[in-house]
Length: 327
Ligand SMILES: NC(=O)c1ccc[n+]([C@@H]2O[C@H](COP(=O)([O-])OP(=O)(O)OC[C@H]3O[C@@H](n4cnc5c(N)ncnc54)[C@H](OP(=O)(O)O)[C@@H]3O)[C@@H](O)[C@H]2O)c1
Image 1 (cartoon, protein in one colour):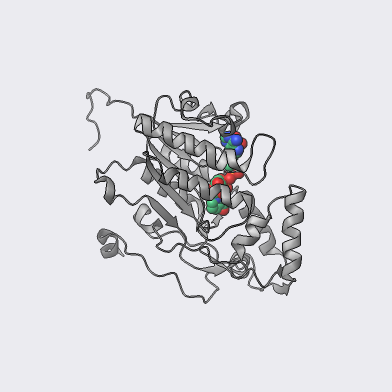
Image 2 (cartoon, helix red, strand yellow):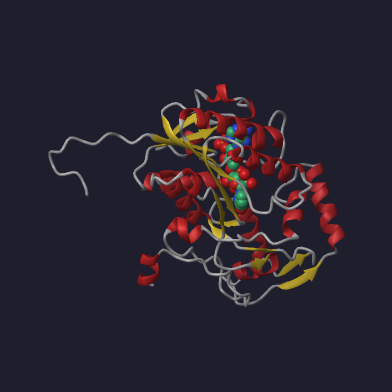
C-alpha cells in the first residue's frame, strides 16, 4: 500500500552496487532496479566517462583487477545492501587478466560480502561445466567455484547468448544476419536459447530485491536462463534476418579447421568478437537444463527474432500458478 498524504517518508532503501553497471548486461540490471524504485551505484573503471553517458546514475570507481583480497573491497562496498557482478572481459590487457577479473576478484568479493551479510549475484555463462580448454572459460568456471565455496548469500546467474540494443556480440549477430550469405562452419551445431537482455536485467533485479526468507539449504542458488527457442547459430541468424526480409540467406559451409584457425588468430591479435572460447561454446549446446527465467520474471520470456524455425521449443518450465491461470 502506498504512503498516505501527511505520512512521514519511509526510510530510503539501501543501494544495490552493480559492478560493470555501464556494460551491456549491467545497464539493463541498473534500469530494472531503478524502475523498481531502488537506488543504485554503478561500479566502473571510468566514472568520469560513464557519468557523462548516464548522468542520472551514481558512479563509483572500481577496478576488479586490483581487489584481490576481501579487505580491499571495503570502500567499494560501503552503503550498499546487495551486489550484482556483471563484470567480464573478452581480452586480457596488462593487469586485467582472466584470472584476476573472473576468478580472484570475485572470490575476494564473495568473502567480503559474507563478512558484511550482503547478497551477491554473479553473472556467469552456460557451458562451463564441460571440459573447457580456453583460459577465458576456465577462469569463469573457477570464479563460479569460488562462490560455491564461500559463505556468502550468493547466486549464480548463467544466461545463454543475449540479444538486445548495445551489446557488442549482439550487434555483430544482427549485422551478419542481414548479409545475403551466411558463412558457417558445420561444427558450430550447438544450440543456444537466446534471450532478450531486458529480461535478464529484470530477472537479476528481482533476484537482488527478493527478501523472501527461506531456510539456507532450500534456496536455489544457480539459475540457468534462456529464451523460448533452442536454435543453432545458423537458425538464430535466420530468425534475426527474418525480422528484416522474408528472403532467406544462402548458407555457405566454411571448413571447421578454418574457423578454428580464425579463432586462434583473433586471440593472437586480440580481435573481437570471435575467440577460441567462442569456438568451444559454439560446438555444444548452451541451453539451460532447467530454464529459471520464467520463474524469476513471473511471466514468459520475450520472443527473440522471428519464429521461422521449426525446432521444438525448450521443455516447458512450470510457471507460477497465478500466471498459468491468467494465460
Ligand atoms: N553478452 C552476452 O551475450 C553474454 C552471455 C552470457 C554471459 N555473459 C557474461 O556476462 C558478463 C558481462 O557481459 P556484457 O556483455 O555485459 O559485457 P560488457 O558490455 O563488455 O560489460 C562488461 C563490463 O565490465 C566492466 N569491466 C571490465 N573490466 C573491468 C575491471 N577490471 N574492473 C571493473 N570493471 C571492469 C566494464 O565496465 P567499465 O568499462 O565501465 O569499467 C564493462 O562495462 C561477462 O562475464 C560475459 O561473459 C555475456
